[in-house]
Image (tube, rainbow, N blue to C red; front, side):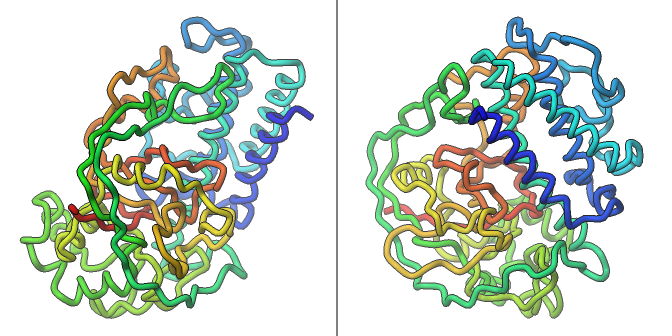
Length: 427
């Protein structure tokens, strides 16, 4: 079997497995406009392959040319996410109202798309079409993480706080090692990636290019992520009540929304919260585990309180460039689906997995960046405004999906992602 066909089957199967613990009702509901129903994720990722692979058999100036009738004509409208060049689309905030098609119909649609894509690979593909399939698989892995974070937001808001699965991983009991400061040199260094090969391998999203030089001043990077216990100390010192620690927009956010703790902390009053909701259900907060589900505003305020700052994305990548993800990094493949305490030892730990790490860098284009022509050019470029970059992946990120150059991005107030804190200082 073609290696690409095998990879296609494995990644698509993993998406189906993520939805397996859920009822049809679970897959239908949308908990907020920023989250999507699991059923929509299952359909949208299939629509992506139909639109940009099956309908993209002929390629002209980077745009899809429909090779035949769509499998389901209405799906172009129902399951398009944000591709204006493809046509009109259903409003994002109303995806939970799409009771039709049923979950069974969406699963049948996935199988039809799978059969057609695998048949196309078996017949032979051009470099351009293989590159589109590789992009689609990486796109699917992004949605695998979103399935987990979106369903966590849904179930975590339920009065009974039901678990996503049964028999999950227990809380880690590893004591957090002392936080050390790792000195990093200044100077000119390169970040980003070069252009992939004609078949899209090795893969990187377009926002990771071009590779370019940056000038860094000497800096210090914390050896591990900030823990729940350390964040609790910030809370007990009045962190959520001290406006001098907060950016103006952040202060407006936390006071307006009455935030006094990270998302999913339950019970008690602020710093005295006792339990945390996880995908395995509610359990006591483990103070040695990394704090997660904090916004950029919360991360920035904590850093100020700690006499530090957040790293820039260039600082983060320069430190991570020679340290690929390891087999014991807590990514989605471990099935923990929650951050674990840092392992003992020297050097930088938890660079990959556990929690996406907020940086102070605004999400923008690299020098010389040009989006692709056609609808696929809308994938990343048009979101380069009003968002912050996160690095490193989380406990919900597939291992094969993460790398040192990967740039995730969200608005500063985002809390439902597995987002955490690594500190930096000027040397």
